[in-house]
Image 1 (cartoon, rainbow, N blue to C red):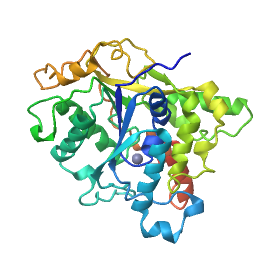
Image 2: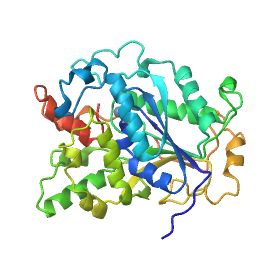
Image 3: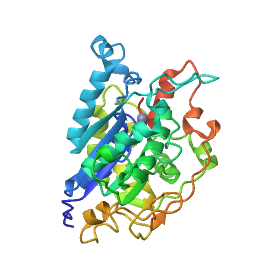
Length: 353
Ligand SMILES: [Zn+2]
C-alpha cells in the first residue's frame, strides 16, 4: 500500500493538559503526519496542578522546584516524537477536585474563565492554523475532569465562531473547519482487550472495570482510524511525559502485538460535518479529500440556522446525560489511603494528572 499524499491538509487536536495528546489519538496524529498532513496540538492549560505520578521520580527536588517547567519540556519532547506543532492556549489547570463535598475550583482556573475569553483564544489559533478537521472531547469530557469538560465547551464554541466574520473580528480572517470529532472512548475496545488478555493467560488490567462498563451509556462510534503501526510512537510520546506516566503501570500492561491484533484502530465520534459523509468511515478527512479546493469552502462563511449554528450535512447524536459518579470506571479504584492505585486507574482512563 502506498502512503497517500495529504500535503495541504491540516488537523487540529484540542486537549486539556500536556500528556492528553499522547494518551488520546496520538497514533492517529503520528499516522497523518507520516502522510504529509500538518497536525497542530493545542493544550488549553499548562497542567500546573498535576502531581508527579511516576514512582521513580516522586520526591525529586529538581522536578518539584518547578513542575510546570518540566512539563513544558516533556511536552516539547512529545511533540517532537509525534511530529506535530504545538500551541499553549495559556490557561491555568483547574486541578481535579476531590472530597465530599467537592471543594470549589481555584480562582482564575481554566474552567472558571469567561467563555468569551477562552473562545476568542481558540478562534485565534484556528484562524491562524486553518485546520480542515478539529478533534476534541465529548460533552462528558471523555472523563469528568473540569478541564476536559471545559475543553469540549470551548471547542464547540470556537468551531461555531471561527467561520463567522462578525465573531471576534480582531482574531484573524474567518475560517470554518469542515469536520469536528470527539476522541472516542470505546467500551467495546476495553472488553475485547480484557478478553484477549485472559485468553492469552495474562492478567488483565481491566478486571475491575468490566462490571461498570456494562452500566455506562454506550457512545455511537462510527469512525475507526487504522494506526496500529504508530502504537510504538504513541507509547514513546507518552513516556516523554515522564513525570506523569508510570512506565511500569497498567497503561503498558497490554502487549503491543496483542493491541495491534485485537484493536488496531483509534476511534472517533463524528460530532459535526459541513461536508456529506458516509458512516462508518476510516478517515478523518473522508469527504474532504474528494474536494477540489477544501480551503475555499473553509473560507466561505457557512449558512446558519435560526440559532446561529452552522448548517451541517451531519450532526452527531444528542448529548448523553452527565456520567453518574458510580459509572466512572475510576470510581472502582480503592478509596482514600491508596493513592497509587487511584493514579493507576486514572492512567487506565488515559489520563495522567
Ligand atoms: Zn487531562
